[in-house]
Length: 103
Image (cartoon, rainbow, N blue to C red):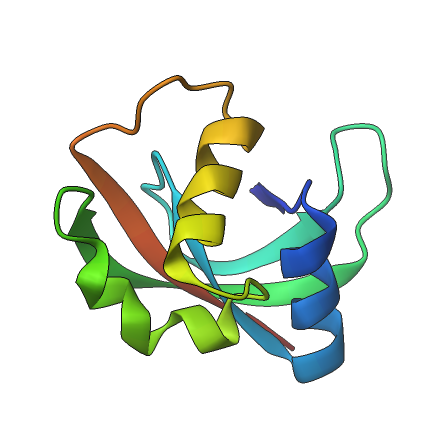
């Protein structure tokens, strides 16, 4: 399986710090994976993907603990990136919080 990091901020944080917290609309498989920028690019890292639960987007304060390891400056910027990267006008009711660790 592949995990994509299309956003430069999150990708750079993973490469520089060895781990990153990420928000995903859907993620059902966890464990060892490869990270890529997009479908056509070669893998840039081998990673472990961990499930850290589901976040209700109406209560984003839970993300305050994790935003400092996301590559974004604040929760609002992080949630806007989710909308932009997924071409959404509105966030879904819940999103997955995952931790990705470079191995």
